[in-house]
Length: 126
Image 1 (cartoon, helix red, strand yellow):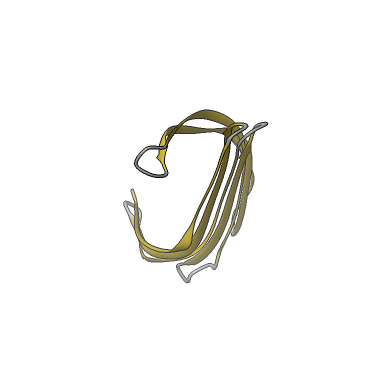
Image 2: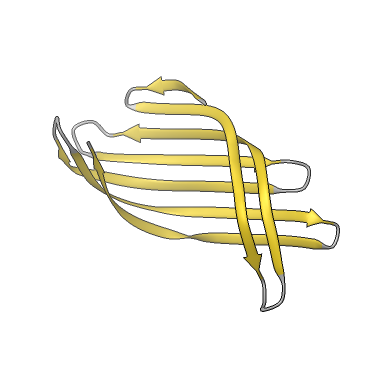
């Protein structure tokens, strides 16, 4: 669930929800950690569009935590829409994303995962 605070040249949203982590982590041939967690999550997004240019920028952040586990997910991007029509918008985007996951399933086993780096994308909005 989120609340739209602004929606014009500058846009801003805030909200909350849940992040579901489900799967297995394998650190070597013999060690597997089962993950099954649902974490309460906070969400925020801010964006700005430059009128008549097709250019826009956006930043988004998600934060989820319970007593043992924590997830931080943030990204920032710029986008250029080269087709802006009534039926379809098509654009290129480039950005940077960081996903940091800390899991503490029991007192003996703590796991920290970090994924970060740039990305490129082609986006079509119908």
